[in-house]
Amino acid sequence: MSTENNKEIVGRWFKEFWGNPWNPEIVDELAAPDMLLQYSLHAPRRGRDDVRAFMVAFRDAFPDLNFWGTADLIAEGDYVVGRWEGGGTHTGPAFDDFLVGALPARSGRKMRFTGTTVLRVTGGRIAEEVGLDDGATALQQLGILKAA
Image (cartoon, rainbow, N blue to C red; front, side, top):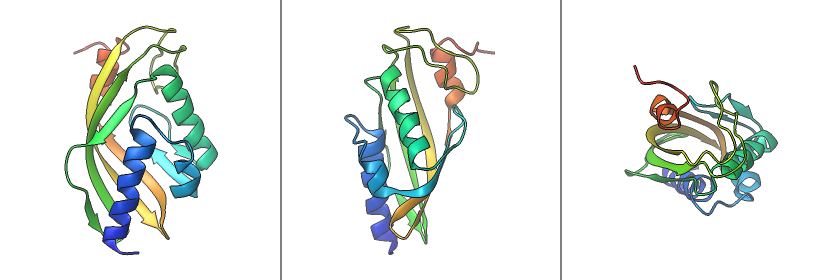
């Protein structure tokens, strides 16, 4: 696939997987069967079912969760890079999917953070999404991590 096609796939993924409202069907449509999803706040996820379960739990805890691109996507070969920002308010059930700490049910705490993500697109499917984010900021905002 061309770099432009890969950018279109990633653009849809950002909008329909990370945007609000989200489209759960996008996982089956655009994720490779063994997709890797990896960010600093959570344990790595592997495969469509694991990726979907992660997002369902994340959105149950943060119903207004929303992320969006902040710059044009950059593509080279199979790789697409995107910058983003977003966040949400914890108004749902208790959430313990962070690598450190947890939130009690309906804490009302807000998080907002930014990052850069590298995605690998193979055969029209997203095989990897690996992000570098300022997750420590989000954990501080949520009261899980104390500021230094």
